[in-house]
Length: 308
Image (cartoon, rainbow, N blue to C red; front, side, top):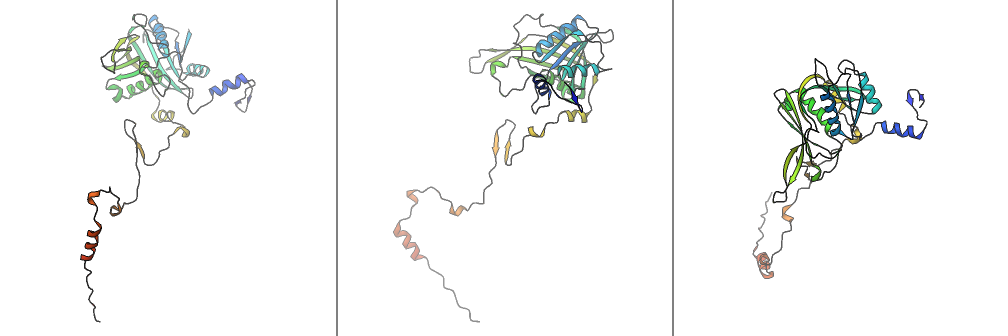
């Protein structure tokens, strides 16, 4: 594809479709994650990357070769692979004597690293170690966060936002009850993050609403927070900007409550209640003779003349 004044012009229809797919859109595609391991990795890290890839499929790319890089020191290789594979999320696994069983969750904005958070694996149970039926591939999970740290601490708030970006899946307009079967639970307690994966089972309850039970399906992680690389508040706010075409215009006199119920306000002119037409009842009607007699009894007062 030749370049003219810094603009790539395709020569074939296939290249044209490829560039149109990479072009900015009002409604962006589902965020894809690239999962890779560093130059040194342990068996625990390798298996953990495969399990997270199984949870993220099909919106993930698993790199099988080792990548000798250190994201906190030089992130150019991550940005290169992100642009090449069109991924805005990444998970990097490594192992060293100083930082054993290391996982780095991160996201990119405009193909530049926005946030990176390093987590250490202290305890890990893989998908294969828990013998139970698994959820189908591509199931949209329900995310549950427990712990005050996710609301009070700045680093934990960013970590919560990063986990939501990473595991949320595609945006859908409606969900059927039977499709709510995968639950990812994150707990922040005493400086550790506990990640658990459950499958919801709908049991008979004797009424219309089923009884729900949770069955652990794995993987299970006990994580500890290590290093962080967070974007500034201005850059973080800039990355959340929405196009003007997607902004919902506020309609006058229409509001919604917390449950989404729509309320409308109607403005009317002041009503003259004396001309209000009420319900006609036979018992309240006046007879014709009585109405004439009432008119005769009414005396008109005389007006006295004043001589000037």
